[in-house]
Length: 139
Image (cartoon, rainbow, N blue to C red; front, side):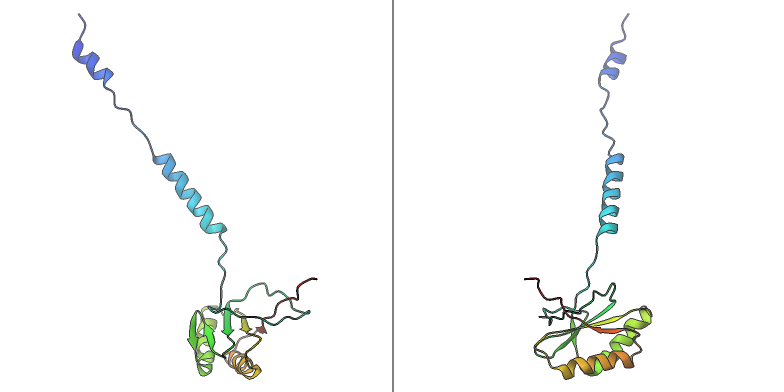
């Protein structure tokens, strides 16, 4: 005789969907995009840099200081006073002693403000202080 109960149990097998490989693949893609993404540091303000035909690209600037046309100074997207530049650079250099400083000054800003900022960076012990410029457009 045919066992009907056993036949019903076998025909009702539950289809399973194993999503473990899909989750693994999503995590691998996430790690890939995180590793290959380049993070760009910015000064926090829009600056119209002056042009210089002898401008050289700096490979890695760890401390960016922005000066806008109104002579306001920005470090890490926040406005600071010229007297606080030294303390901020000292703190940043404590985190990364090999760091270099790039001052991104607007072409409408005063030279005196840029000099005061660069002086504060040197007094903080920054080994390399640069002033940002852009190359002239090819015509």
